[in-house]
Image (cartoon, rainbow over all chains, first blue to last red):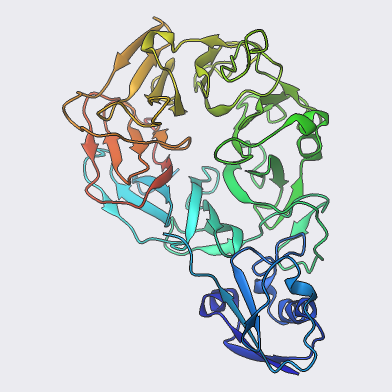
Length: 89
Length: 376
């Protein structure tokens, strides 16, 4: 089980601030979250399954965002942070 | 439309949507609360078949394209289903469908309420060059594959604003006849309820192509098209390559903008209360702004003449206006509304004789539309 901390902005889509998830990869973790909180569907990932460009995933503090982010294994991981980039103007 | 006799200007901006409320005099306005403040709102529109219903095509930089609906003139909004890019046949909100598409939906551009005879039908235009239809007021969407998988699609590319399907027009006499406009592709027409589509760009020049190749069947960068309310076969078109009119359901186009010199621009509107008139905001083709002052040009299709509507001294500056940036109401005389990329909202309550600025600095404006009573 890993602890997940979620971006405050995601609360408008029904996300909690924290949760605990049993998952082997980032993709599995997101699928579990999407199942528990359907409002998150298509917010973290687009319909191709890719993380949206401004969604950042940190595994125990390390940024794993990018094209291979969803395949990142969570073996031994304790804390996952899902945030959005500071961008725009 | 509204039973309360109010005129509402629906404004889509870089930072959310607004409902601006006035009365039939159109001289005093109250700016309502902002919604979808994190999103780039490319279009806000009222559904005249269901008074109070508004739709907002709100694109989030962070969380993707989102579609919102209000059932109370914008007092509250709720996110509804956003369609998925093909190959999904249809999608319902929270339907649990698994991601499988090869191409992600990038932005929502235009929501068009369906024909009055089809009171639960909506159309949605999106980037990349996708058209969707809902027959349950947005609870689910189905892709219109005759466009989304059109055989000419391999030749379609994006314009500077993206691969946007931005114009959807329905013939008021016949729900099965529709017209669409797509950046860098041009206009298409269907006469069989969307089963097949034919390009309708004859006579429209592509000045960005080499000599001898400037009148292709498709590839025109249409910016916006407005239908004439009195004659559904007449259309006014602002293309990258100039201003045009068609009198035969887009079978052919005639350029009308040459007397203006540079007839570049993005937007056009034609009011119900002034048939045969079309309003364009001419921009300098290099700077993409007005040339030193705010200006609107009126085309009189009967006399085939142009008229400038704004005193050059009244609003000095270089103003940009996007493709959905002009709208007209259904009153007599018609009101004209123009939103700029620097957040000004100009209003003429008398068909362009006088102009005022709504005293509110909006974020950069993408779109303006009007929900109001008719002159009848």
